[in-house]
Structure formats: structure tokens, C-alpha cells
Length: 315
Image (cartoon, rainbow, N blue to C red; front, side, top):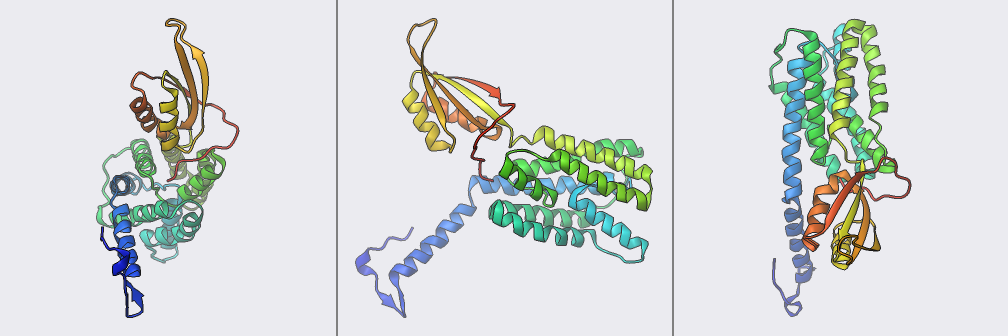
């Protein structure tokens, strides 16, 4: 960080030393913000996710002549439909063009950081689709469906858990989830079924049926491993309520309620603190609470139904 006293600031060529110092400070701050642990983890997740999805597509889907869902499915469907009329279209180019308008919308309504890493994931997936050769790994179509569905879905989960996405319908799904707090993977699956039905009219319903099964496995994998919008309730038993509450409020944007009580065995005053958080915040919350009171007891319960306002963790 540059050190400069106000007395030394002078106007030079219409720009003051103060303005130069502020510009340099902002540049250094922006550079530091990008090289945070969070961004490095997201970058790694994006690369691994793109690689996994490209492998799943070229090894299992393309080799078995199946069609994925979402915007990738639209891109592949466009490429295959183009081949029927002698028009050779690039799947990678179509995938990028379809994602752009949705990405601009998401940048405004979700976050620019999220969209930046999501587009990086889309571009890397497009690159890996070109680089990784298409080769049949399994002879049975049903095995391609099972392993391909799980692997493709797991690739999307890696991106989502890292703070990015695979683009396309993920943008739409996360926008709705951020607004309503409810995941719409079932609705996404229905959309994919419609898409794959069109695929069936063009290329045969046998492969369309296998593709729908693949999409079902992919969607189930995502909903099983991606639990960002699932809420949990923390019951915290502590004898240091002031320290626990202060540490919790400093770390999270959620509220916490404290109830005075008495230990049934010890007979000493004990406080019960109740808080509702995202399941993604569980490990961070337990670390914060135990740092404030190492003797605290934390009980974690699933919140099956939640009604009311809730601040979603930033992506």
C-alpha cells in the first residue's frame, strides 16, 4: 500500500497526487480481491467441472448418440438438426451463443462474479469438447446412460458447489431459487423431457427414451448433492450467549434468538440460541460458534418447511 501524506499531494498535469494515489490503491485492491481463497476454489471447480462434463459428453453421450438436456441439449439438437439439412453447425459455437442473453440477465439479477465464472465454465467446456476425442468406452447403451447421467450431473454439481454453474438452465434455476428460495429441478427436468421428445420425433423414440432416462439420473444427481437452498435449524446450548451471539451476527446476515434456561442436571443457567441458516453455511457456523464457546453444544435439524424472509448467501 502506498504511503503519502496529504501535505505532499499536488496537482500535476490536471490530476492531483491524491487522485493518482486513490487510483493506484483501487487497482491494488481489485487485484487482491481476485486472488482470494474463494476465487481460487471457484476457478479450480470451474476447470474440473468443464473437464468432467466434456468427458461425459464425448465418452458417453456422443458415443451412444444420446442428447443431453438444458442449453447443451439445445446446442447438440441444433447441430444434429443442421446435419439433416446439410448445414454443419458447431456445437461449441451454438452453446456459447445461446448462453449469452441469459448470462447478461443473470449478471444483473444474481451477481457478476457468478456469471463470470459460469461463462468461463461454458467456454472451457466448449474448448474441452473440441480437444477431447469422441470414443466409445462402454458398449451397452444402458451403461452409457447410467454412468454418463451420473458423471454429467456430478460435473454440474462441482460448478454449483464452487460458486459457479454450467450456464444455460442453471442461470434460470438459480435466479428463481434466489428469488423464491425454492429449487426448480423438477421443472427443469420437465423442460428437458419436452426437448428430448422433439429429439425423438427427429431421430427416433428409442434413443429419446434413453436420453430422458439419462436426464433423470443427471437431475437426481444434482438435487442430491446440491443443497444450497436447503435450510437447517441450529440449536445452540451455551453458557456464553453474549460471545456466541456477537460472533454469529458478525459472521452471518441471519438472525438468532436467545432463550434463557436452566440445565436440568447441573442446575446452572444455560442459554438456548436458535438460528436458521443455509446448509452450505453449516461448517462455517459451527467453527464460528465453537471459537466463541468451545464448550457449546450444537444440535442440527433439517428445516422441512420455512415461511418468511431469509437472506440467501451470496454466490
